[in-house]
Length: 330
Picture: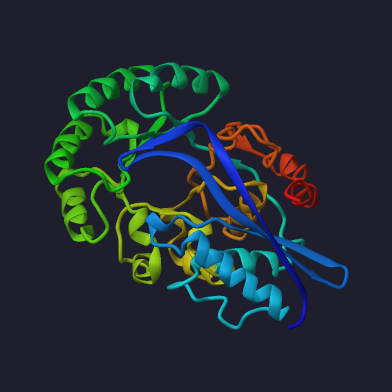
């Protein structure tokens, strides 16, 4: 199908580098794609993270440039293996979302790694958050576990904590964490991706032995990772980053049978990627878990007009003017 296709690149320094088990992340880069057919204009975001198994920025740029030259939608939009981020951005830009009603969503507060969490969580509690996500595997384990116990004492009744290791724990560290988490099970929603991709069977055994839910995140990316989205394949939560997982409509169909396990999560998108991802959530009414989009204040630029709040409301989403964002990238 013939159309006018264009794209622009963005580069966003984090206000504070994000600390994970794999080191610091200081700059987010990606592309905004614009499709125009007659009076219809659509926007999508292409935000690669090669460390998560996606295409590189260079590969994505070359692929998008090929679309600009051809002026046609690709028949290979679902090529998850090679260009999952391009597939997501292209399918989002070329799909009419206007007929899908927007919804409100509870948001999980993203907490900084290490001791900085103590002061930040107090502020997040005052703002009304009830679900919190904290990075582990960053500091020495004894230090982190001491901070963890302090953190639990600050949480209000009924609050839930998610611990995210980004696949950075050893088996010995995982066992140590699970022994501790067992003692505080009611306050723990899950431990996210404690071991590296490829060790899913070991993580499943640990979840069964310690009765602590373990969520998959990095394991879901790439074509091979799609097998964990099949009903019954994984017993714990599934942390889904839509921007990394290919064609949007195909992803919606994959998530429907497992929606009760799904946690939609951010990859530090602009307002375009946020709205692209939330359109998926809008079509999954059974989605109940707090979404992992407590990332709206990670940058000091004006590519995200929404302020971080414990409820991401449908009304506030109407304030997102994607055309204005496009113009800012010129």
